[in-house]
Length: 602
Image (cartoon, rainbow, N blue to C red):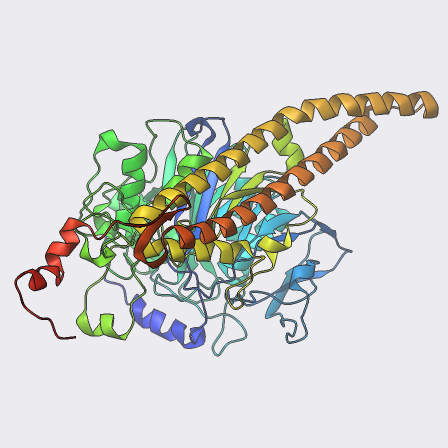
């Protein structure tokens, strides 16, 4: 294997000329679990949309559609900030132009298919009615490309549009991977152009299996290099803004899908040869290493693997994440995983470790253990240095867990997404199913540019920020509320699964009555009636639960303000209880100066 010192920063500098300060998702984290690694046999994939408080946080339902022959599908540039799309092509009223908006203009077209599936999306396609689900994580890569419609543009497809097309057309994870890869090869792929890099990684799942998908532009900027590796059914994996696929074996078609360019480009550049007698290391060849700073990516990988398989004692330090390969592509968790395990990991700030951002004695967290480390600005650049990058993050626009299952109820519902607007640290993960008529306005309409008290996004932002006033105390209130509402949501989903059988019985009775009247076969009618009744019941329950979750967060923010107002702990029966500051913080502050009779001028 021949490793190289890439000139990718020169490529990236040229690529950034079109980026021009537009928003991009920064530092997203993805978790994946196969069906034999979960408590209920479902397949899980998650995603955190870690933007910079400009990323569009809306959850939108895209309906199914039919098209006549020779229709062309428009392809749009993907800004990712609000509004991420404006137009009528996708038949989603949320995206229709408002009085101060104009419809986006396509940068190109591809042939349309006869029928497209319904799906739910935020920045990326999340899950469709066939329960194909996707989580995204931007990565560094040795090549970059510029989108069509910009100076020197050569590539048509972003990862945003690739995931949308996969949602529209794919009925399995494997089909989604092949479709995205082949379209990117044909029409060209461009990456986000953010500090993480010009390449992408996806977790792609369905009710039966999961894949890790990596993609980057080819050297011409007009095609793509991509590879996918199947995650074993009993394994867990994490994607944290760096490629993880190592040795690719194109002969093992059950576990690997790769473009021909993977090997062709490596041979052309002199980076790999079949005469080496080794399989090509995809990450070693095509990654440009960690983004931002050392440990920005690898520490998250260590933490997630340490949580699900602690006995392995994987190292938290390493020399070069790209070359050393300290962590596996995936591993078998020591306990079966659940949706709650995924949401808990998305809230992780290294609690209980030497990197705990809220630990006592961590001066950066202040006296009350604030885990937020604000984005670098002028002073940070002048001083130098970096903050530890945790999984849970204050600047997340939204995060979610998608659950795909062969359970009959899931098939009727079209799969589930547990969606959490804003930071995972302050949000409540709320379930929706793909076959719902529409997402409620509190989740589909609000955004960062306008404060809105009907908004779940702003409710979560509010809770996270007010809890930081006295976080070491208020976090208990936040967690209690999150646990209560999320446990209720999980119980609701279980009840829906159980209720399907009841509606099937009702459907059969109605069908038999119709058969006596119409004397026509009742099988199709039975299924249709049962499903319709079940979905109406499920929709009513899910929408009420979403309203309860939103109301709960707004109520919690008021409770926190009351309880911790003006530095005290306040209860209706016992107001103004002074709790002071922690001893460790007093010892490093100006507190001791006054005890020695000195006067500190301010």
